Image (tube, rainbow, N blue to C red; front, top):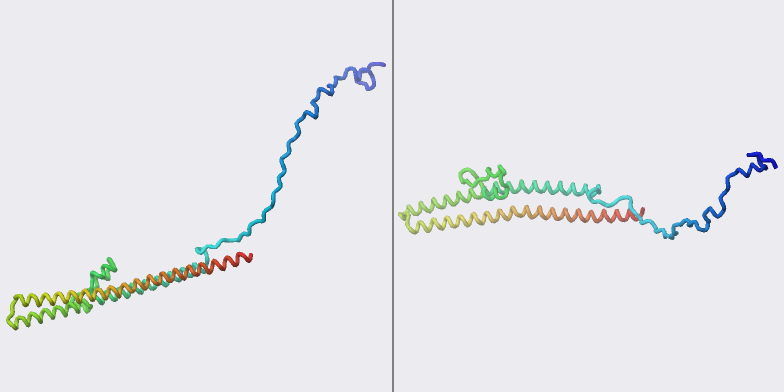
Length: 214
């Protein structure tokens, strides 16, 4: 047979071809590592929890905020009325000491007076009465030619003591009257707070009912 390189069927077409590797030169498929597969797990789908589209917040509830604002307005009005009543009582009583104790540096304190010559307050009238009693007592003692001896001294002491008792009793009565305004205001605050929290619970119950219907 003729040899013609590169011509199929001739000797040269296969003699000069490169040798193919033996089958045994390739790695055996049995020795190749098998691909690892991830283990399969079975999961049970849990039902999604029921959620609500919003949360209950008293600070953003329109009704509750309106109620709180109205309550605060009412309390402020009562506080202003109480202060006006206290000033009227203090002015009528006439004790600057007591007025300063309750009002501090309020200029109103300067209007309060117990001067019997310029004021008609309770203490001013008490001072006027005491002054007249002392004057009358001294005139009686002078008319009896009893000058400043032991008897006159005891008499003046008793008048002064009784005057102090009168002032002390009048002061106690006024302080009790003034404290009544503070007690009434404190009771109004407690009532407002109780009404507010009752409204909060009512609104919360309404919110829960509406949320369960969704």
